[in-house]
Image 1 (tube, rainbow, N blue to C red):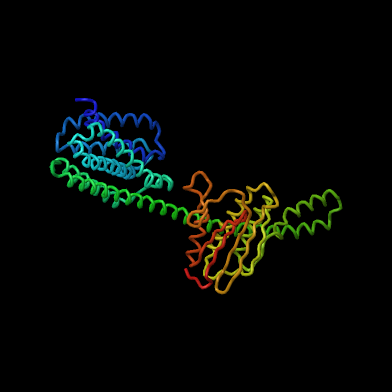
Image 2 (cartoon, rainbow, N blue to C red; image 1 turned 120 degrees about the vertical axis):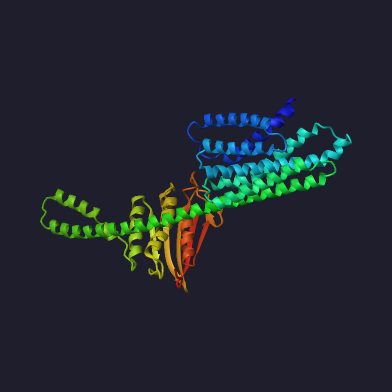
Amino acid sequence: MDIENWFTCYLKFPLELVLAEAMFTYWIPKRNKWLMRLIFFLVILLISSFLLTQAFSDPMEMAVYIFIFLISVLGIFAVFRYSFMDALYRGIAAYATQHIANSLSSILMYCLIPSLQKGIISADINMLTYLLSYSAAYALIYLFFVRRMHKEGLYNVNNLFFILFLTIMLFMVVVLNYCRVYFIPWEGNIFTHILFSCYSIIGCTFSLFVQAGLHRQSHFTQQLEISEQLLYNQQKQYQLSQESISTINLKCHDLKHQMASLRKNLSDPSARQILKEIEAAVMIYDSAIHTDNAVLDVILTEKSLLCEQHQIQLTCMIDRSDFPNVSDGDLYSIFGNLLDNAIESVMELPDPSQRVIGLNITTSGNLLIIHTENYFNHPIIMNNGLPITTKEDKRFHGFGMRSLQLLAERYGGTLSVKPDGNIFNVDIIIPMSSHL
């Protein structure tokens, strides 16, 4: 057996499958001693391919490919920090990729058979056709599927029904393809072989589309869960902040009266100076913002103190402070996210004069309009109307704006984000007659 036939019999499929699996898994966090695990399973995979190919003859050779596929899935599970379900999900995508490339190579070869028989082209064209087919198929699948999945991040896929459906569908496509190879002679049936290969490509491509959709669904589901958790945490924080600020204000109020009484009895100038400094420290009571809305009082007082700590000027123009049908927790989340995003943005500015945040609450007809604006000096990339986070780990950042959008839509409203020059504008518009 020459080298080409030996490669085709024992190494071709395992290496094609491993390369496709690497394409779908290279960004996944790896387990401890992953390199040793990888080498171990590659050796097992190649030995299994050799032994199984010797044990099974045509047309039972299909069993070899199934066993190799299952071993490779175990390898994904052993090397990467993934559940077996997710390893199977990635393995199915890789097998579909390999099968698309193999079917494309078969179509090209069947198209070249008449030219080969007439001696118009050399038989050496086989290797070139093989390389071109696999390179093109893998490159296209990477561009249209893998790159997008990588960009969306790592999300566990726990939909057992869809994974079982994909497994059965891929198995049927593979079985049909091998029935064609072993039971339909190619002489006089070239068109039939091409038609079956096209069917294999369509079936596997559909499988990849389903998997990409399932991955995106998992992506959005986890984003929604994180946003909901953030909203819940903010509502709990509101309760704690409300209690803390109320307690602080009460203590400061009492201290002011006690210090006023003490001042009358102090004759030592140094003692008076110390008392004056203490009194200035408890002026937080007078700096508290008072509106007709208890939630606004808490959140604006809390954020104004944070702004004062970081030399940020917060200006508020509030024409209306009642928010019909909006729960206290959601109201705290809305203003908390708005102001937190603005504070985080202006804190990065080197010019203290630009550390300014404006908050306006107005009404227009039946609409409640909440507007914030602040300076910024970093590039902003918009996607679907929302800015993309600049944090390195995008899985757990960038949820502030998504939470605001979720809250606005909950009450029948809209969120609008508009960078204008070096001014970042955010508008939330909520109908006053909205219902939960």
